[in-house]
Length: 168
Image (cartoon, rainbow, N blue to C red):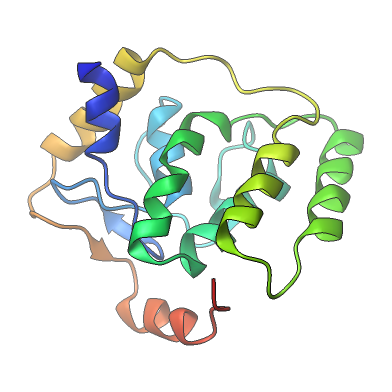
């Protein structure tokens, strides 16, 4: 239970971040990179993700992350360990179509979460990671931070991006 609590102590935030603060303070994709065992890196677009991450799924996760309220965004934490699931071009295209057919401008955040859940059932699943593995990786990044909270990668860009977010 302690290791799951460590995951809950990670704070998901809107936009990209140069480095997380002691609070975690990253977007879902940046947290997923660390959880999968990669070195921390800012994620400005899904093309910044390592190859083992599904582009359509990470794109949806980024959309949800950046459009959500602070409270809603924390509901994405259970998905952090599930994004490293890239598959064949055919399967990635199937995921893309699945998402496109279900995401509409005005659907509620929880309904969008269900679309993410459904897309994750298509094709290869991410390798199962223990909560201890994930917790240790996230803790290591948090402890190496020099700031109490994360700093947005580009504060002006994050603000502009927030202006154009759809209501959740």
